[in-house]
Image (cartoon, rainbow, N blue to C red; front, side):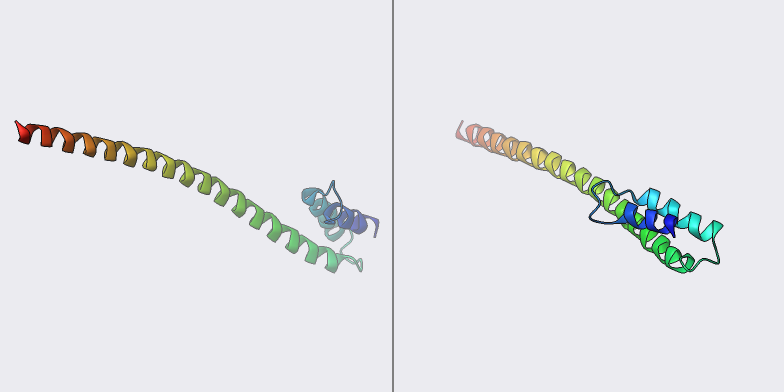
Length: 101
């Protein structure tokens, strides 16, 4: 029961020092060392929930990195587009000057 409660405290959203990895460790210990305990099934449920949470958090981190990369690429493309526009204006200006002569 104590290990399960430690897991709950470690995973509680109101805990400013929450640590999902530590909570998983407590819940896994309950399941492994006390499989007949009445807390074993709830611990298994919490393991699934926290593993899914970790998976989603990792996916979120990857998406944030990808987003940042895309933002940087967008800025590069915007810069290249502006330079291209400036070049087009310069080419058109020279073409007009050439036609006048």
